[in-house]
Length: 448
Picture 1 (cartoon, one colour):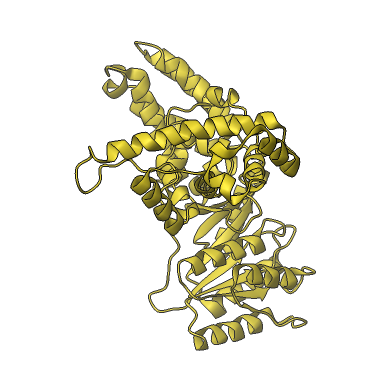
Picture 2 (tube, helix red, strand yellow):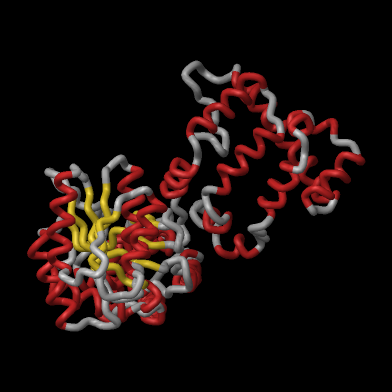
């Protein structure tokens, strides 16, 4: 997501940052290049022009030209305006003061409405909100079955009336059931079409009138770029949508839809869909996204990913063991490894760290199978060998190699790296007594 746009913007801004002095012609030339890059990324023409105009108004003045580091000041201005273009601040779901909160999912067929409904249901359940899904797509074959399957996967009930075509009637009866069951959130998966048509809009207007939803979320395929913005405007004109979910943003989308949709509709992007898995839904934070596009990192999102992925009880247990006894065996390493895998691909995590740019990432050879191989090696050991790696003689290592299908050289490399890690843990244990009471102790990399 945004990789091409990010690389090109970084190239332009890096050239300006390296100059000790910036003149008006230099800034104007750089901004012309930025506008060209935005248009190549399929950003709306008017949005791109207004963005460059605002940056130019702020940049051509004492704030930048007279600054000690004019290049850095210009980057700051670009970051501020990019954040404004994306919506300025996070816009969370509007939850009703008196439950249930009613959410309508709308959009074209194939945009990912049903999957997104399942992802939001999963999130609501994890927030301890009793949730129900409602199947209001009575036209697409297997739409009801798909929603029921998603409901089973996330552990959320699904209201459906197979064979019934009165969509408004289904919705009214589902809402009555939700109120009787004291549901906190009800998510209505509506029908889509291959293109906007009056029949679709009329049905959605009648549903809106019957349900009086707290949220009408327009789900757009981020891969179709500028066309997603035009479709969003059509739905907004007809229904007054309250927010946008952009899906398939983990692909090679150029990013034009994300950068244009707020400026054209005035409606915030609430979530990004990344991947088909039900945990692939990210909150959209304009400021953080602007930082990622400008390769400034996103530490807050990295910490939030860690908090969501790590098992707090397992992490606390592991930390107490290491800090208490100073021992760290391969069983502990396996626990830490599995928690780390929950964070997702390593290259995606590295992009969130400030100072890590694309050039550095190109030098990092990330093998997604590497962690699986390490896990297989450790699981091929006996429990005693995991607790006491020093017992692993040549014969034992050959046996482990046959068991996991990995060469002995990989086993040797893992054990050498593990030995270095054990030394680090002992050092941290030794430092514990030097820290003030109350804990200035640095957290384990896989801690809470």
